[in-house]
Image 1 (cartoon, rainbow, N blue to C red):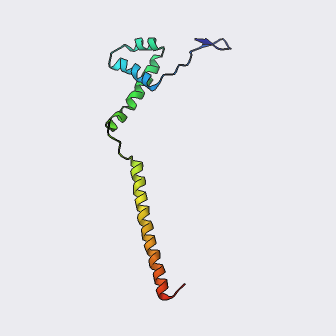
Image 2: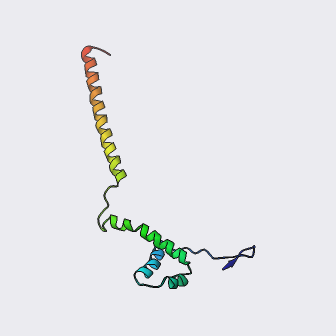
Length: 112
């Protein structure tokens, strides 16, 4: 532990990668390593371990959303954008046709 200028002690902040966090939680869940042993070995608190475990479970659904090796399909937002682009293109075609018809009718009637 480090001592600050005010004489109080604080823990040195350590950073773990996502892969390291997953490996630590997996060691408990799969290999049945006791949480207390993992926390002591990696110098983390039990609360920190449970936080990582919670994050793992909350993000677990993403692992089942796509199949490995298959490209993901367009997202809902991407599909909506595509639909709106198609609708806009259709609208532009209709406007262009109406303008052409308007110009043609003006020429027939001799209007400028």
